[in-house]
Length: 291
Image 1: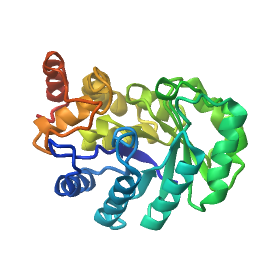
Image 2: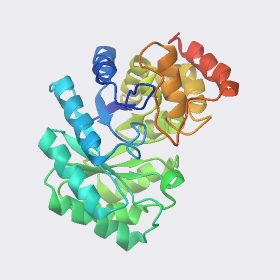
Image 3: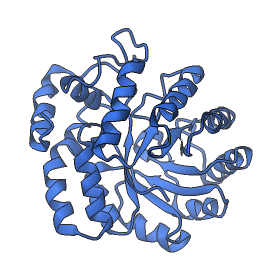
């Protein structure tokens, strides 16, 4: 089981929106050197919504090559089209990804049976470990624990990223699916509590900016060391909140630009962080000690 701090990696871009592969390689090395436990490539934070299918597959493949087996790579391959999700998942498998992360279909708002059939179809079509991703704030649909339980019976569906912030779901899903089914927080602000309650890690936006601290936080929380975890989490509280003052990944990309890690590129309809928010994000970065 993949555990710990899994960074929801940004996709660096030049000012014209083209993918900056040199910066991508530097980010991968930054995370490996900082102790990041795994990389999620081309998820929401990686601007999956605005990369075309060819670019999506290319970025996943390049991250896999750059990582070169040193830590796991999970590819974001979800879509609100089951057919497209299958194609992206096939592409990720061919690229050598260790697993795929599949968001619940957004915008078309399927019922629970539709969610079940969607994820079942992808799992049966592509033999690669798959992680469900429930983020109602983005998709307008909530995958209920009963549906997760049904899907957990499919052999290559190995876990779920829960981004509701509802800690009670940890014990509910654990009871339904067992401890061998991976539970990842998708909410940095409650990730420590999530892991202390029995979760196995976090797929983190904050880890883009403070990867070493997020790794240390996860190690402490997974070991049940609440005191150490709380001390680290207190330093990261500002980032947990301020990285969402505008839609993710706007603040995260601005912060990495401020750190000199990436150029100032982002794709429309997203734009770089508004000036009125920059001071608060910078203050959170100072609190975490990254600048």
